[in-house]
Length: 413
Ligand SMILES: [Zn+2]
Image (cartoon, rainbow, N blue to C red; front, top):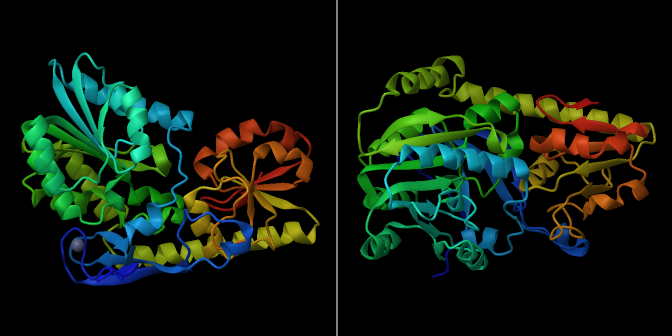
């Protein structure tokens, strides 16, 4: 029997509890990365986008999961495009590298992409293995001298890897956990391949940052989970693993990096406890009311932004956007901004140019066209690159153009 495209998630993905409470409803939106030509973009199928809060462990997750092949079949996300990202992963890799002094240290990177992260670990000292389902990326890794398996990481796959390569000193998985269908199976696989003294490090988007910065647009169907340290620290215990350290880097709009080992001893226990206490008390992350308040705040933001846009239109100003990221799809669809309000969206990714933001008829154009289009206001949808975009478009500002920054509160500068 064929599996349904859209399945409702009835249990908590971390603790299996059925005690889930719907806290934020973003309506129905098309899949964030389904860029299509203008003729068919509005006919895209829409799926429910809602969040459930787990009353048992404090986890936050989507109410529905979409068949992965629907989402990743036409993936136009190009890695390694921004310098900021590159530098983030470089310093992250350097930090881990320095923790392992021995030669022949073995590292496995899950969702290794084009091998950029593994390549920061020098060939002479490290045995580097990557695993990623994208077949086209395998070649790029090979060019860097990195062996890459083109497959999803599962418990079953970990058995094959163990037979061929043994266990690993370091396992990494960056910004992939929220995409994984079966997290239990995934962590069983990690447990299976990690040496007793080994370290598993993974980076995920941090729920605390989403709430603080109002960046609700990072919610889309590809991200099943919105993690915090407390539920994760309980979850890993199921696999006889322990959180031994954490960091909260600014990358990707605010991330949580978690260091996990089979060893219970950690000199960072105090700071871990302190952060969990902060999540509980100061940030109030484990209370349904926090998410209800968040929803209200976003509705306020929507009203404010739409009235700013309307003002500009009333003053005969023409508006465009900058940044056609996956999050732009959530943003425009939830805020009900369409081709009636915004003429174009500029984006450097050549693969997206000429196509439309899913669910709208707003065309994505090469930023080189900006001068010709007589734009008065530029909404920065790629808010994580706001500084860069403003610096790159000094001429636009000089000519009297204005930037509209949506978060944390919409404002014109
Ligand atoms: Zn739970």
